[in-house]
Length: 283
View 1 (cartoon, rainbow, N blue to C red):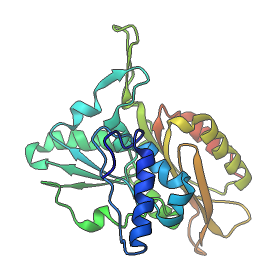
View 2: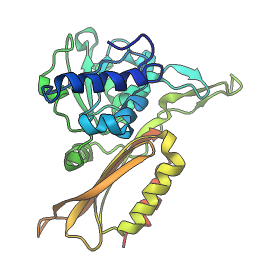
View 3: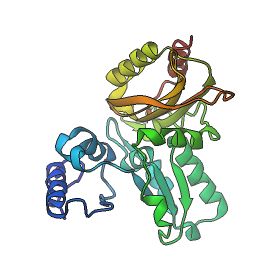
View 4: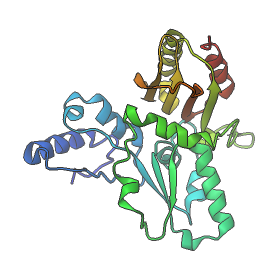
């Protein structure tokens, strides 16, 4: 147990100390370490702990983020109006997730479950969803996710291809009668780009580096598999906020269509600008 406080900020240092202590005491005897945060935790800083802390990343790696959704009360929290600049934790926890468990499905009817599912898919078009009662799901759904493994990025974007979100603004400013004091956090959306063609890798690097530099605070997750010039293989990348990494991946088949697949999840995403920038990288 870590000290009392919010895992995402107050006790983040304690999380690092605890992980390093476990590694020192148990060495390689762990298969997995499961960290359960509070219902009000912000996932971003916890994720960044694994990605940016050199000591932690030397011994452990982040497998994935699992979010448990209470279907009976989810819409109340996802639609909750917060003061301007205040984060809706429920929306963020959905946005960062690699796996989402739709729990308590026995307490809602089909129509209510459909509303919750559609809302979640608009926020996060990348995560896999699983329906459950009493949180009962197969262990393989929540462990061994590989959500941050570059060699498994293609699986993640492939699963998203058939549910491309398109232009999906979930809400608008909520302030004409409140002097703009509040804003819907439903501005968190996902945008998918699926397109054939060959990209200029230098142009892609410039675009993505500029994107995370300028919009990193609002960019929760991004993943992609792309076809680039001067390469017979795929190039894969992923990022969290301002952290971005990429590498060459497996070759394209001789008769395989070179289809680029990119997924962005974040706040106030400008879909038109993203598509325009992508087209600007095409040869």
